[in-house]
Image (cartoon, rainbow, N blue to C red):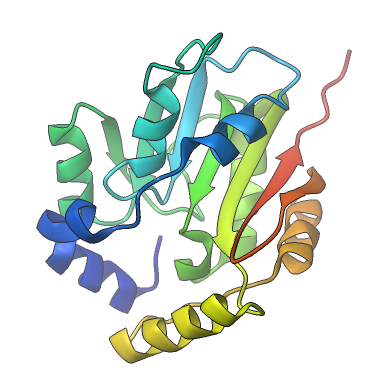
Length: 201
């Protein structure tokens, strides 16, 4: 789950969140999901709030893309209600103790959320647990070492968030610590780190 202060903030702004959240670019998510060595039929949007990532990866329109099922797990009830109102399956839960079975999803997406989690290591370990062999974790985050990243860190501190931002290499190391094979797919203010769960053939 998010830190307690972060959850309370998202509870309060849930009705307005999608209006002011940055537009979700599905391309980095699709690129990451395409690295799975198995069909991606079920995706977990971890700490996904109103389901921005879930809607991005299930939207039609990409040639050759067969839209998977997606479920959002988040700690904020009001955010999840917004996800459900938009037709996305939503489950309230703690990112560090996911209410999902082992090996129950083909991919996990964490969009702009890892920095809010009080125990990102536990969340990444849980992502690895629920992934099926040859599935992928796709983390989309912001680099605090960039100019825009430093501004974002300052803005989140002003709001009162207890955020912990990591650069791409530190994020890749954390993904490796969770037992996944990491790679940095792109860098910049926004970056994407992939974690692949190696399967037994």
